[in-house]
Amino acid sequence: MQTLKHVSVILHKILPIRNARIMAGSKVDAAILEALGLDAKSTTIASHGSSGFASSFKLSSTVDGKEKNYFVKTGATPDSELMFKGERESLNAIYSVVPNMCPKSHANGACQSDPKRFFLVTDFLELGSSYPGGSGQSFAQKLAKLHTTPAPIPEGFDKPMYGFPATTCCGATPQDNSWKASWADFYANNRLRTIIRQGIESNGADPDLAAAVEKTAAVVVPRLLGDDHLQGVYPVVVHGDLWSGNHGRGRIAGKGGVEEVAFDASAVYGHSEYELGIMRMFGGFGSSFWKEYESLVPKAEPKEEWEDRVALYELYHHLNHWAVFGGGYRSGAMSIMRKLNTKYS
Image (cartoon, rainbow, N blue to C red; front, side):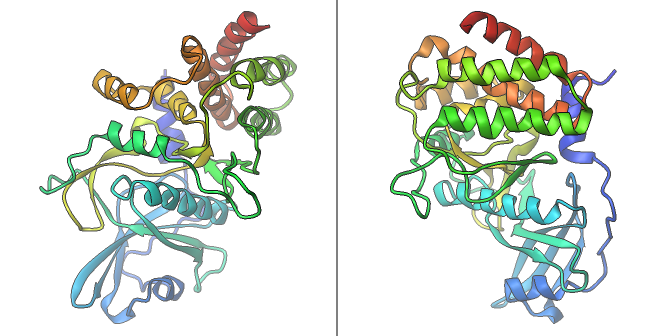
């Protein structure tokens, strides 16, 4: 029987890829060369590793007489263009705050040889590297910096907002990141109410689950996250899909030494504690991490409701997995909602 964690690996890493095309040994697509300003004569591409929902490659070239490597994803699924645009914006939002935490993304777009195939190009990440000379910063320190740096003011607004300038995908699920001034409004409407609609589209009507989600969104969210209740909260960059499989140690872009890194981001400008829901759901971050992180990013007030807030944020990921897989994730979602709805109704 598959455990929750095993099924998550399937969601994030090894779902079948429709219309995948192996590019090893072939010419680099002209659109990629143009986007990166590379010479076709000195550029090669070969299959490298694996990535959920995409084919992945290592692109090597010579720039100013020096070797330069990039990581390339390509995909021809209906959502590939959306996924890659969201991931590019997500990685670069993180990179702008903590450059040594993730690879920078350089380009995304449609392939010239096949306009129905799309690409994403990022810095090459040498996972598992032991190259010396890194910053020595812990993952807790980097995540704390990410979670305490105020978000930029989006175009057309006069203050930081909750949301993101692009649609992002958590696994296969497109997420509504339209701007909201209130975090409670964003979480209730852009996350909980949106994911239950998507899950019903995938799995069919489920009146009991839908009613529980609506009660949680209407009652528990304003009670725990309301603007007049939750204190000291402001929008920061949240990775959005930070389970242990999207964290590692590696050397970024062939520069410096090994670093604690994150990748496959699905970012949003949100409450920092939102990040903790999926981190707690699947584990993999040890007690030393949590002790250091919590010393750098104090729990929001009221502190005594922290556990319930993290459970509320974990709920979204149970619902997202249910939307994709159905089955056992429904019971996890219902268990969280029964507890919260009983306590705060």
